[in-house]
Image (tube, rainbow, N blue to C red; front, side, top):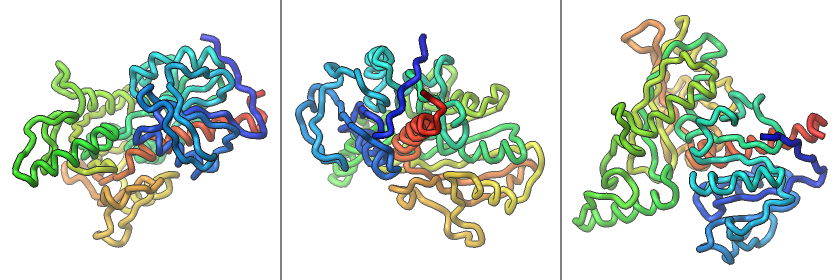
Amino acid sequence: MERRKIRWDARGAHVAVVGATGAVGREMVHCLDALKFPVREIDLLASSRSAGKQLETPWGTKTIVDADAFDFSGVDIALFSAGKSVSLALSQRVLDAGALMIDNTSAYRRDPAWPLVVPEVNGDLVRLESIIIANPNCSTIQMVLALKALEDAVGIEDVRVATYQSCSGAGQKGIDALITETKHALEGKRDAVSAVHARGIAFDVVPQIGPMLPSGFTEEEEKMMFETRKILGREDLRVCATCVRVPVIRSHSEVVSVVTKREISVAECEAILDDMPGLRVTDRGNAGSYPTATQAEGIFDTLVGRVRKDPVTPKGLIFWIVSDNLLKGAALNAVQIACLAWAQGKDGKVA
C-alpha cells in the first residue's frame, strides 16, 4: 500500500475522532486539549444512533456525524475507538483520503504491515504518513513502560503478569453492567450471567476477559503476550499472562514478575523505573504509599509500587503497577502518537 506523506500545516491538524461518544472517545477529546495538540478543525463521529447529538468541546459545540457517511477528505489524523468492526470497515476510506489512522481497537495490532506503538518505548516507528498505527491493549501499555526501562538498563529474560482489570476495559457498557449488577446484588437479586462480562461481576472477580482459546488462555492473555514481544522487538521473550476482571470502574492494576539478565537490588530497580518517562514510583522510602486503582484515575502517569525481590530466583523482581486504562491505556497513548507524528512535520521531517 502506498504510504503518502501528510502535508503539515502551521495552523494545526484536521482531526476526526471516531467513537467520540464512547468512554475512550470522550477522553481522546480531553487529551487533545490537555496535551495542547494543535487542532485546526475537529470532527466527532459515532454511529447513526448518535448522529445529530451535540457535544461541548474546547473548540466549541460540535454535532456528532454518522461515521459511515463521513467523508474523510481533508482529515489529517483520524483517532479510532469505535470497535474492531468499525475500524476494519472504514480504514481503507481513511487511507484513500490520505490521513493517518491511529486505531485503538485490536483490528491491526497483529498485522505486520503496521506498527504497534507506545511512544515512550518505540516512538521512533511513528511517521506522519497515510498509514495505520495501532494502539496496544490497555493492559499491555502500562506493563511495557516498566519492561522497556528494565530491558534497556539490565535486560530481561522472562515476564509473568497477573492483571486486575477494571470494568471500563469493556467500555461504557462494561461500567454500566457493573453498576446495574451491583445494584441488583444489593437488592438480593445477584446476576449469575452478565450482559457484558464473562460472569456476573458484582462483588466478584472473573478470571476471563475475552473468549477462551484452545490453548487454555483467553484472547486478552494472548493479546498481552503477543503485543509485549512485538512492542519490545523481542520475539524470544518468555511472557505469561493471566487476565482477571474485577469490580472496579476505572484503572487497571497488575502484578508483574520479571527475571532480569543480571541481578539488581530493589533500590536500583526503583530508580530505573522512576527514571522512565511516564512512570512514577510512589512508595520509595514509604512502604504504605503503594498506588491503587482509584488513585490512578485521571492521572496521566503510570504508577508503580511494592517493588520487591522474588524469593524464588536471585534475578527475580516483583512489582505492582497501576494505570488509568482510559488514559494511558487508550486515549492518552493515541494522542501522544498524534503529537509525535505532527511534530515531525513541524521539524521539517515531513514535507
